[in-house]
Image (tube, rainbow over all chains, first blue to last red; front, top):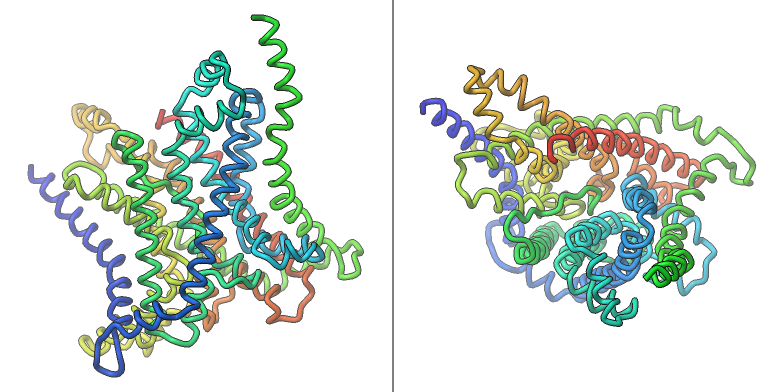
Length: 268
Length: 291
């Protein structure tokens, strides 16, 4: 009894220190963002950001790019993972290996490689966000692969496929109308994760000279401290929204025990 | 029956490769070829002849220092983040804490692990920068002048403090399943056999958790080592890190031989590659207990 009480006191102490470390920078940013002039407070920094056309442009750019990344990743991975699990199980270790390679080749290295290799490529590719999109699909590959693979693991694709086929379904029907609907939760959670990562991605966008959301934040931060603090909190809120979306999706899908997928190499 | 399965099998053989082709072509074009072109470039002169000079110069003071600082910073924040994150996760996830703590902690960790890069750097500038709130409060309330005493957010210590903000949450997320895997039966069995809590940890808890903890720390190391946005956003920093150095090579700030930059990138891939290989080894060992 006594030791249990002592233990919980240490626990409380640990948790409080943790909470402080994580909350103080956020509170400081909040205070910073509300400062106006020497002594006053106000929402000037927020109105400045929200009325800045560059804010909307860069956020829209990153958002659309994230959507495109999600679509391309899913189009590439869902049929591939399905096919490999169904017909070519020997290729699974290869897929596993390929899908951790983006960790081994960090964004800063990948972007240099892409820029070098495609230096002389046609301008419809190099001068448009198409090249950035390709980099982002690679960047998101580990997370999307893990979601899709875990989703396929959870359903019996062999039985589903055979059942659908015996009812006369072709491959397209099997994939689109039988497998994909059953993967809804996995695909949605992978999508939310990708959205979070791409919205915060700075490295590749800045080296490829695109005005993504993170590049815009850095740009504001170079000259205006208070709007930058406001922007920081706005981006924190966006990350929260995406994470809550992820949680809501996985909660509904699996009965309890939903965990936020751990990840490395995100927007660092 | 046999004929259909046979024809199905044959079709899979031909169609099979067609089915996986788009993915592998994509990965080949946008992951492997770019990487290979870097590695080849690292062993070339600007005229295209073979050379070892680029790789050899990685061991010159300027580059070696950047790597050393990067590795030190990543190792320090991996170990500290690993210990602190592990203790926090243990405190929050095991018996006695209110039900609400768990989803709150994992969700917040998910957010904080993602809340990195440029915004994170700004949050810390608002907190511990020269005009940061905590800096000012410490100065006016306690008379403690952080910057006067040699602290700087733009130094190694400052960077470590910032990195921990995403390292600790990542550790919590990675280690949570392993902590859940610690069965209460083991603790009870140890108790019944007369083991003290210390003995339980020494002979049961830690040996079971160790592969997971070490694996998680390696993951944290690779994570910090690859970080570019956070240190790049603190441009006024005097700390030279490997990723930032590579970025400078290709941003037009420096008029330098790109092949030197390729060699730097190759060095990064080697360091991360070794840690990821170690990680998968430990992961296999840790899997024994989470079955």
